[in-house]
Length: 79
Image (cartoon, rainbow, N blue to C red; front, side, top):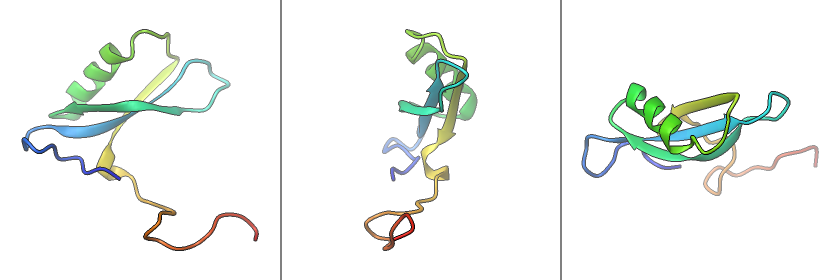
């Protein structure tokens, strides 16, 4: 996981998710830096405008909670 605070102290990292067709799942398409959510939305729309999206979402990187990671032991599945 990345921290949402940039080294400069003014920007946060936002993860960008999109889908180009309604029947497809949201996919992580990249990360952007912005000082707030409104500017993150504007930057994501600009940065990823090469495609026609039916849905585009941004979320602060530090808002995600790890379910499984090298630090948190466990397994996924029925094993």
